[in-house]
Image 1: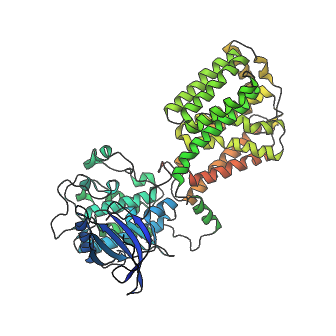
Image 2 (image 1 turned 90 degrees about the horizontal axis):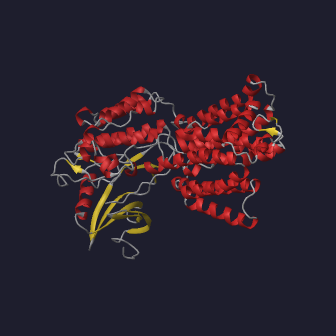
Image 3 (image 1 turned 45 degrees about the vertical axis):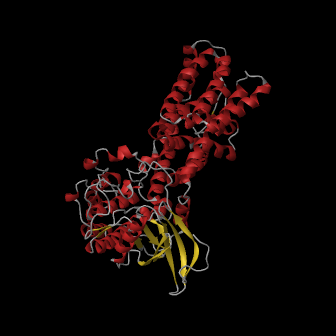
Length: 586
């Protein structure tokens, strides 16, 4: 764009708002009218000018408080300028990423979108590209939305803007008939609005991210998962209306007015948002606000794999002497770095480096290690979860200080180990209980090998290092029998392993809806598990413990659970971050 003080002798550019495939959008001051406007600048290309004129012609027919107004269209040399109302706020995509909209607020937004589309439909304008990026949420106390970008709108009173079979818009929000490139009418907009609301209420659009071939397969008969099943807590009228609007057959679909009336009816049964957000609400929203969470989640898996490899090797190689002293540091650094860069390969090499020391300690334990740990790792790697496969080895590392001396700081550290199964459940889904069970047994075996003074997490009196007697034992059966006898003498360790498996149950399955609701579910779940951990050993097994230390150890676990319930992907989303920004596609 040329560098000039004023554009058309009246517009002063302020800053760029966004860039798309067809256009760049700028914020500008209209010096003649004393207002700010958005300017979409389109470089001439095939059919680009036609797209801009269509957008202007479509929007010029519309005058509604929930539709972005078009002021004028001007041409200069090889560019076309579209001057529109400037809306200060964020797109629904950004609001979804930050999770700033409650159910009631989202439904209000849906009602306003329907009103705007009803206005457009009465004037023969079909938007054809309703999606979260094309809905602006105006800054302010009350919900106020604007529909923007009529660049692919179809005017029902003129010839079609596309050749037969063309697909314009965002595929993941298109109605089935639009995906097939067929005839499109106002019911396609209703489908797209319902899908936007479905995503806002459940946390995901099941069609986003699908390969094109998969997206186009079985289009005429594809039915999205029922909203009533995904959000059983919603008013039935609301869920049924959106399910009805998402039916693949346009003949069976609600029109814009029908959807609006259904949303208004359902909204009456939703709790109103609180007038002012308190510290708790602000904290919840702040935890969920980072728009780069998806990238952080990806990086976090690699960092976790590297740290787990480092901790496991430092803990075990010092207690299983085998390698020369000078080789330990290079070995640990190399394995940890490889795990950081390539979790699957690095984790495998970390476990392979432990095989010789374990066999040197006892051939029986070596065989058990290879069979049990190797099989578990291979299975998790097959499920693409190798980055959490070393998690059970971190349990003994965190519990060792408290096992030797149960002072409060060490007890809190052991509480981090108690949160490991929860992390496994969040990360590994249905396979989390397997990791939770192994965390319990590795911690129990560490107590048997080292003779801890107390046994986390009942903090009952420990015993001698009875499993040291299996050193150099060649028989697998003999070492397995020794381990079984030790666990039989300390049944609380077995009970705790089972509790850790329960704690690793994929908690995200239970966490649906608003962040506040998810927090309450998470808190209740952890409270039940903690109560069982404190009460069952003394009441069911007659094992005296120290409940106050168990409670102290539960604190880090509870905090991690509450935070995770907000920032970790739920069963609905499967992901954390989403793309967002100003859409300037022309």
